[in-house]
Amino acid sequence: MTSYFADEAWLPQGWAGRVLLDVEAQTLRRVDADADAGAAQRIGKYVLPGMPNLHSHAFQRAMAGLAERQGDANDSFWTWREIMYAFASRIGPDELRAIAAQLYVEMLKAGYTQVCEFHYLHHQTDGTPYADAATMSLALIEAARETGIGLTLLPTLYMTGGFDGRPLSERQRRFGHAVDDYLRLVEHLRAFEGVGMRVGVALHSLRAVPEQAMRAVLASGLVDAAPIHIHIAEQIGEVQDCLALRNARPVDWLLDHAPVDERWCLVHATHLSDGEIARLAKTGAVAGLCPTTEANLGDGLFALRPWLDADGVIGIGSDSHISVSPVEELRWLEYGQRLATRHRNIAVLAAQDSVGETLWGDSLFGGARASGASIGALDSGSRADWIVLDDEAPVLAARDSTSVIDSFVFSGNANLVRGVMVAGEWVVRDGRHRDEQRIAVRYREAVTDLAKTA
Picture 1 (spheres, one colour):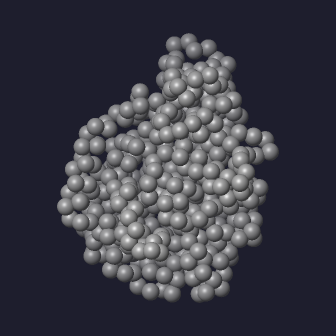
Picture 2 (cartoon, one colour):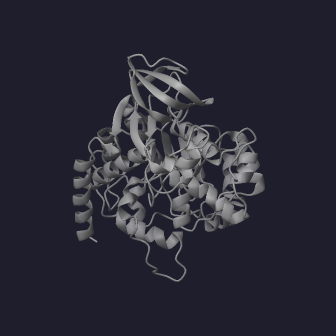
Picture 3 (spheres, one colour):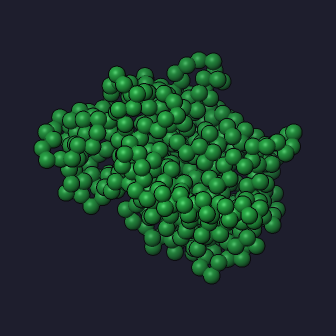
């Protein structure tokens, strides 16, 4: 047992002072407020639960900034997707591990302690499987272990190129699986589960997974207690195609054809009708929001206030990693609503008038649910994950527990995370990851080599 002491820590009931945190076997065994420090290690003034990142495509971090020149007067998500496909076609397992490790270091330093990796880069570039079908998945597992971040690996089923059932394009072939092959991959990866590792399933989207395939996966038994993620209603074009070919909006169709419940995370869910909001919120499914990517791709704005009013659950992800910061995701989630409504302080609850605390707390809860892990709270039985804020940072001067999270979220772009623990192990101390220099060198070598093949 190792004991730690925080001047103030954010517990499930809110801020508490003089908090003793006892850690054993990667788990918080006891959390006591108003305690004596005794021989415990003092860890800082402000301690928060680490944030889950519920949506990541790790390889896309290496192309951030490479799709910002206009190639078409009508540039959109769909033109960006072609650039992404071209970039993905050059990435093998060694490059994926190098990119993912660098990304995960950045996530940890920013305050993310778990990542849900929505992984569809399965095969060789011509669609031929590797000798070990799990080769690319194992690159992600190795990167997570190396860096110390918790991982929810979501191998992704991707079968068709549109709602009309068209075959995958040449650039999409490396994503594809038959259902039986996909289920074998998921079952194989389950052998790697442990305290910091969960395996769920991802259905890429309604346009990429036919109804019968979806039913087969959901009936397989592999998803009974596992997270289930799906991209949905991200783009207006997707909604229009679903209406035209399935005579229903995407979320309505999914709710009519699948047992959506608390296991599910619907990523983006940008374009929902009022009826879909009401129906989906009742299921307990998580709306997986990625505001910086959704802004970068021109997706649109999620209807946050109606969703909160319906008691909907949210979580945040960094998706394409145009930004790797939970603070920026939360800030822009709120700012998008302010720009749309021309009002301030939108994301609040009847029992919580702080925007920062509402967003951080709700995203911890939803992110933990979507991760399928015992995380997101400083509570007995939870994994021992936390972040320590830099109370010496100028922007936190003269702050106290009533204002520190709002200042953390809304005070600028300086990283205020000083220390990060994951599963009882310090991975960031004094703002530096334990192995960031070596990982950065390998990353630079990998992306330099990728640039030569462009």
